[in-house]
Amino acid sequence: MRDSLGVPLQPKELPHEFIGYDWLGRNIYSDDNHEYLELDGDLVLDEPNEIRAYMMQDAVLKTTNQLYEEMKNNG
Image 1 (tube, helix red, strand yellow):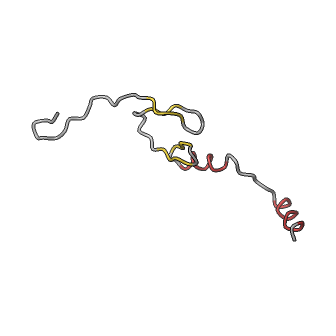
Image 2: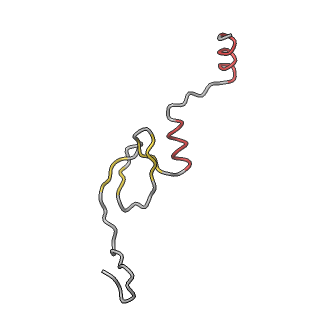
Image 3: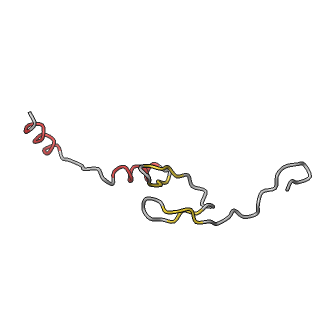
């Protein structure tokens, strides 16, 4: 439908449909107005803190001494 000026009328409410789960198991709905990235098959909220947390979930942080020992042992 269009108004008197020919502009399409917007629905009064967005549909509240379940889309799926993000990488943390949180529900995603069609009307939440968030942007998601698909990384390795997982949906990640497009915000710096969420992306950083996703990338760091499998990261192994090593101390300087651990890195030194690896370099010394590998040649």
